[in-house]
Image (cartoon, rainbow, N blue to C red):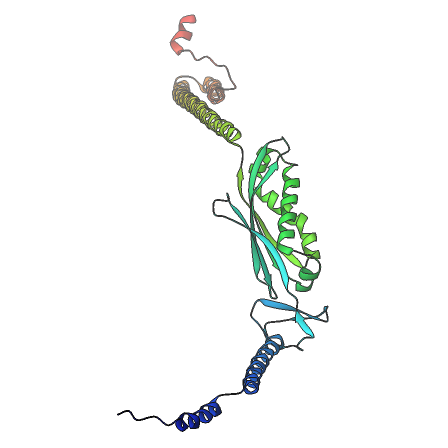
Length: 345
C-alpha cells in the first residue's frame, strides 16, 4: 500500500535555498571591488616604475620634463616625479654584417638607456672606385664612443646610421684620390685620413672616433689575376737580378784576390832584391876596406917616411871614397882588381 508524500515539505525547503544565493547587486559590488583593486595595483606599479630608475654601470639616461631636456642620470638609483619626468627613448638603426660579409642585416633598437662603452660598426663590403678607375670592394671597421649623451640624442636622429654613412662617403672620397697600387700599400694612410676627416662631424654629435681599420681590399677577379702574374714576374726578375749580382760580386772578389796575390808577390820579390843588393854592397865595402888597410900597412913598411906619408894619405882618400861608394844609390863607382891596374902599367 503506497504512502503519499505531504506537499508541505517541498514548500518549506524552497525559502531556505533562495536565502543562500547572492543577489545581483552583491555580485556587481564584488566585481567592482576586484576591478578597483586590480586598477590600484596596476597604478601603483606604473607609478613605481616611472618613479624609481636604476641606471647600470657604463650607461646613462636622458630625462625630459614636459618634453624638455632636464638632466642626465648617471649610474645608480634615482627617483623621478611620476608623469612629469620621463626618460627619453632613442630609436637607433644599425647594420650587422655576417661573418662572410655576404649578408647584411639591418636591426633597430629602442631603449631609454645610452651605452657609454666603445662601439664597433662593421658595415660590410663597400664598392668604391680608385683614381685609375678600378672597382674594388673594401671592408672597414669603425670604433666610436659616446662622450656627450645629450648631443648624441638631440643633435642627430640616428647616431649609428649617421656614423656608418659618414664613414662610407669619406672612404669613397679618399679612395677616389688614390691609385690601386697606392690603395694596397697605404692602409695606414687611409686609416689616418679617414679618422682625421670624420673627427669634426663626430665631435658635433657628441662622439669620438677611436679607430678606423681597413680589413680587406678585394679587387675584381681579372685584376687580381693580373696582379698575381705581375707579382710572379717581379719575383722572377728579382731572383735573376740577385743571381747576376752574386756572380758579379764573386768575379770582383776573385779578381781582387788575384791582384792582391800579384802585388804581394812583387813586393816580396822587391824586398828580397833590395836586401840582396844591400848585402852585396856591404860585403864589397868590407872587402875594399880590408884591401885598403892592407895596402896602407904595406906602404908604411916598404917606403920611407915621405913615401909612407904620401901612401898613407892616398890610402885615407881611398878609404873615404870607399865609404862614399857604400851609398850605392848616389854614386856610380866601378871597382877593378889591383892586378888589372898593374897590367895597364
